[in-house]
Amino acid sequence: MTRGTKPAEAPRVARISVVRAIREAVFACCAVGPTSPAHVARVTCTRAPVAPVTGTHRASGAHPGAAGRRPAGLAPYRPGRAPPVARFLGRMVYLEAASVPAFERLARELAAHGAPQRLQRAARRALRDEERHTRMASALADHMANTAGPVGGGAARVPLPRVRRGRVRSLESIARENAVEGCVLETYAAAVAMAQSMSAAQPRVRTTMRKIGADEMRHADLAWEVARWLERRLAPEARARVVAARRGAARALVKSAGRRVHPNLVAQLGLPAAPAAKALAVDLASCLWDMAEWDMGDMR
Image (cartoon, rainbow, N blue to C red):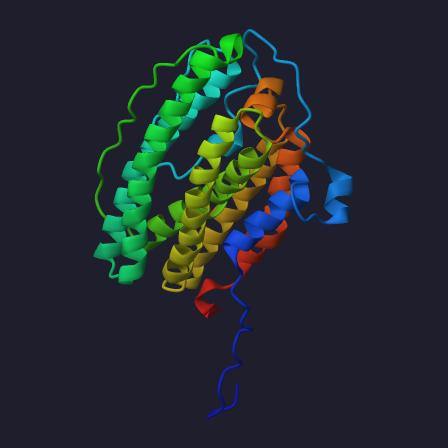
């Protein structure tokens, strides 16, 4: 570069709307609302009734849509033997409760590192959302246990997640966790919740997931806002490690989303069946996670 000349600026990319990307992915992959013909030809998620299947099933309660922002050090949920619907809802209660300390730590660490007040306020609001979601998920589990017969399977005993408060971490550690838990898992969970709100056979499920899904889409948007703020402050090597973590989490999610989903989870709870779930993950990967290889430091 000649002395006195300015270095070439990295190309700036228009900021994407995370909420719009989620909505369009659900419409495209689950055929609910305005659809892309190419995606609808690939997979359709319908509300056709599915006969309930009683008993237990190996492919049941670990649908990736039940995941969200998990705090560091969280022990895995161990549901024991129960019907698939009860196992899924028990895991949902457990993970919603675990998201409370996750957002508490995020808010505390954002404050410690001098993040904008709007991000701190949004993290604290998300904490309150997750407290409400825990109560809603628990009420939904009780409702399904009392009204869905053998499909509901009885209310599962859900242990309270135990998470240590932890010290304030480095920007890279926070960014890496946010990339995986927020930008990938919580974003996908928001999309699945939206699909459930339109596809579940049970009206109570549709109502609950509509409320939760609206909040989760806001949480997903917050994750990407936090990513922009954090990652532009990292050294290139650290930023590359965060991008690699996000890319690895996205690949793992696409793979796990293709696992068979129990018919009761599809019919009663509106979870996307394996083809639709994987198509949804692939769609989000193409419009969000692949594009996240951008240099966040150059994003406005």
